[in-house]
Image (cartoon, rainbow, N blue to C red; front, top):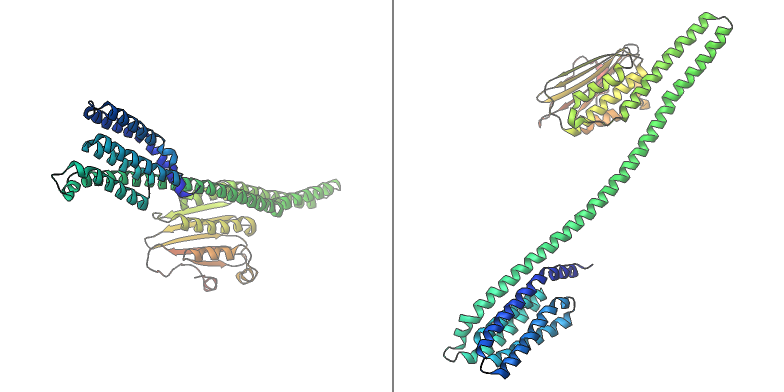
Length: 420
């Protein structure tokens, strides 16, 4: 629906109560006019008929807002009626009262500056012409200045103010409608994104289950079958070896399942903070998986939610590597909040890896960790030696000034893996 038509409909609804005011005003003018025509019944009868026609046109005027030609004819008809009433009554108060009401009503009906200006000037000219013979003692300028112009300005100003408020309300209502439509659209988009995210998460979980838990359970089955055959043949030592392998594989599958279950839980970093989130992860996954866990947090946490998210995902990737690949017995997480920097360090006593080979292959999620560190303006450093465990450290600046990270205890070969 066009905006002008919407505004016209809103103006029509708001003008309906004003019809009663116009009818009441015309009624008061009629009572005043009949007091002057008590001795002229013929003129009084004609005056009554004209007043009824005048009021009837006021009553149906709102239905003409959408029809410009009919509205023009209405204005002409009302002007003709008021001119005739002026001639019949020859009363300045009746003339002024009817013209001013007609000017105000016409401004409200037309609602546009140029047509309103033409109508006001036309009605004002007719009013002056009708009032001029009634004031022979005054010149034309005095009559206009004293009676018609001030009242007309007052009426036009009030009508214009009403129109402005009406148009403002219409625009506000239109904006609210647009906002509601945008909100519904955003809600629809959010639902679609949620569905896509849920689908992607399901696919990721399916891959994780296939790549880790399913393979581990299949290995458990193989070890169990081999141990059963060896026991049947009386080979107790070999069967015991397979049973040990079965136990280790089952424990690994259990750790993988705990990790998947934990990742299904919603992460509430904004409520709990980075330190609490990391501690909850260590207790729920690594601690229950049989690893010795040490967690230490120092200082007051003052990180934004975006920085918390990136640091948590870096720590999560490092802990996942410990759980899946390191075969570690112990993991340590140290989180230090200082005035200008924040330092996060994850250490394990696992089997370690060759940094150069992993860097070339892009495995263990290390490129993703590096990108996350760069995203928050931090530095990532990794130290790992085969058979001696791994240390992952990230340091970011928490002040407007650029601070050179200083992470102690990392050898020179780890600095080669540092990212700016």
